Length: 265
Image (tube, rainbow, N blue to C red; front, side, top):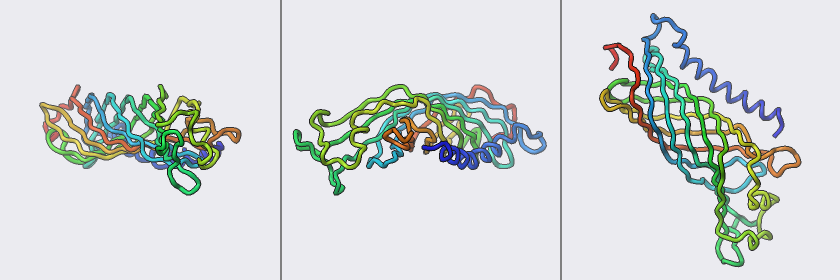
């Protein structure tokens, strides 16, 4: 991928994320006459199910690969601005991502292995430590009840390891029927060449709060990677290899610090 394409991609997403973040966090610098002051800190744990694939160029026919995510969450709530409860959320997550290839021939049919007689399957699971930092806006109850929220921000990822799974021996794989030049690159498990990942993450969900128990959160989230984990020059196999994830997760938070405001409900 050329630098021009990468810069255009970053600018396009920055044009979406930055206004959202500035709007969400503007109460940090606003006077108390504009919004209701908050100074609340909550920490906890999160976990969920990840469905992922990879944006390859040239294209690789694939389906979603399932995995898990588990980590820690910190949330700082700064202010209620009109009806919006504004906060900053940070996480450190252990996440399994990757892709599952649908191996096809020139006619779009599954490639059958001559040795086993089965349709060949291949998947590669990549493990990352992911660090999202999101601006959060919520509407509803803060202390006891239900709150709807949306959140958006940047995410960094640090590659840890990967695991390959297939139902055939490498020496006996069906090379002749495979489509395109990608068969060697994918099946030979090309090493991850770029260990640092970055992109944009956003989500929406519901939070159920109780003053004595804490906060229970259910969320759906989407991540779009802006970086590639394979090299992308003209001499390399792929021009693009960026991650994307759909995540369904639950989070539990308990309060470390609360605002002294009897009007908060």
